[in-house]
Image (cartoon, rainbow, N blue to C red):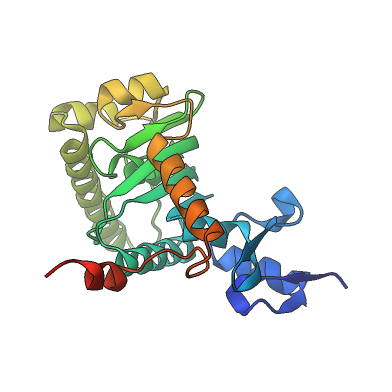
Length: 250
C-alpha cells in the first residue's frame, strides 16, 4: 500500500487511495490523469509544512476549475470563494478554468481560460470582474444554447420544453450583460455551437485580454508572500483582514 501526506487532514499520512478521494472532492483533477499529486514543502519559522499543490494554490487565492461543471464541483468552488472572501473581501480571487461545461461574493474574481471554456465554462469565464477576464493564446471558447432531454407523458415533456426555453432566455441575458452585446446577436450566435479563438472571444466581449505570461499582479503577490515567509512572522500566511484593521490609524 502506498502512503501520502496531505495538509488538508492535519498533515497526517494516509493511504494514497484516501488522498486521491480527498483531492477529487476538493476539486483537483483525478489523480489517474497526472499520477501522483505534487506536494509542496514550505520552510517557515514554525517548522516544515507540506501541502498538496491545489491547497497551496488556494492559499495564493487561486481556484482551479477542471473538468465538467457538476454539483460537487460547484459546491467546492463556491465554498472556496466564500472562504477567500471571508479572509479578505477586497483582494482579488483568481479562477483558472479548463472545463467543457457541465456570484455572490464581494471579492473581484479574475478568470483565466487555460485550455477550453465551453458551455457553462464560458459563462463562468465571462462573468469575471470587468477588465480581469483573460485567456491564453491557444485556448478555445465555445458558447451555445442549453440542451437536454425529457421523457414521460406528453404534458410533462411540454413542461420541460417550456422550462428549457426560459433557461435559454436567462442565459442569453447573462451573456448580454457581461459582453455588452445586443440580445439579438447573443441569440443568433448561440443558436448553434460557436467556437472562438481568444482574439475572437475578446472581440465578442467574452474576455478582456489575451495573455502569454502570468499577470504581473499575481507575480508581485507571490513575491510579497515569499518575502513575508522568509522573514518569519506568522509563517508566511500573511496578515488577516482583522490584523490589518487593527493596524489602521484611528
